[in-house]
Amino acid sequence: MLGGNEQTILSAAQYAKNTFPGWTISGYHHGYLQTPEMTLSVIEKINAARPDVLLVGMGNPLQERWICQNQSRLQVPVCMGIGGLFDYWAGNVSRAPQWLRSLGHEWIWRLYQQPRDKMHRYLMGNPLFLARIVREHLSKRKTAEFDR
Image 1: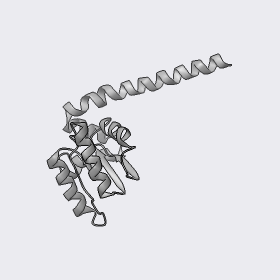
Image 2: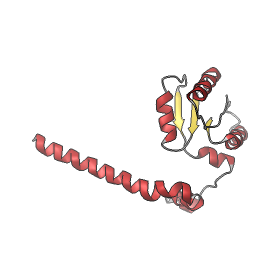
Image 3: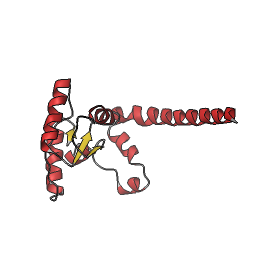
Image 4: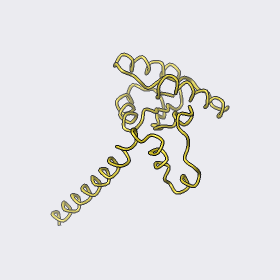
């Protein structure tokens, strides 16, 4: 388990240990890896622990970048970016009510709980992402028309 601050990852590890008794937690470390030396040290500890799965909870896109940049050095079969899961497990944030989750709109609850953290992503980032998809689709369509 890699991510969160020191208290969050400690609480999340305790939650996982209590909730999933069949798991063997081979280690955990906070996600504030500020120097290349610190990153290398953590990777060495991960490799020495030989986990089957590495859960990386640094938030998007940091966790994906970290996994991509360090994948060749990690000796772990599965590395998974899990976003804010450690915050849930640590009790830092709560889950949305069931009716909101069943609609697929838990993001609204997260925006309500953490407006400063989530406003940019949900209200600006998502529309920008969709606009980029449309632009890419249209450019491929134009390219296909020229190829005819």
